[in-house]
Length: 193
Image 1 (cartoon, rainbow, N blue to C red):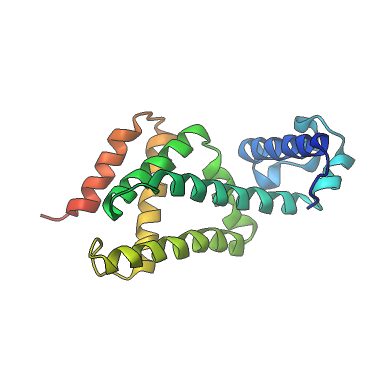
Image 2 (cartoon, rainbow, N blue to C red; image 1 turned 45 degrees about the vertical axis):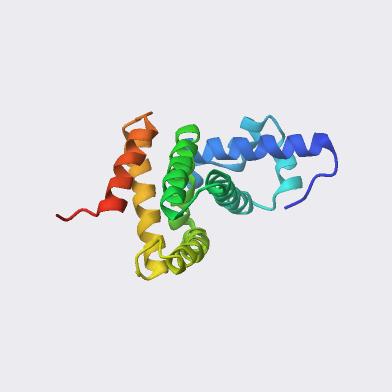
């Protein structure tokens, strides 16, 4: 991937990235072509290759950017949390609101499982490793139960992903506060009487 040196180059690259996100969302990785991306971006096919070596190169870039943006949003959302419970609430809400704004997230992230399983694994492993470190810190403070932090990180990622997918993407619910409150009931009280 080439880093543009001019504002015009930066703008062109951004148009290609936005176009690719839309093409992959609408047609999928295998259904969308470089020509589709270039047409959507309003550039010639050859211009695509100035910035990216291949469709896979662009896809990997998009996947990496989604991960960075989600983690950055979460970090900002939880930075003033008084404890881990509050951090979970704020982090979950942040993710739900991100999904509400960009519902293509699941198409792009989960399709990586069928493009290259290592991409999918790396995407979620990166999240889980960072999450597990935060959970370990909370365990040392006595804020989280003594559960394997790696397993717990995947449990929390799974809950958040599937609730967002079902409630926000498929059911088009807009009230993220209600959804977060219901998830927190499970986390706070468990599901068994």
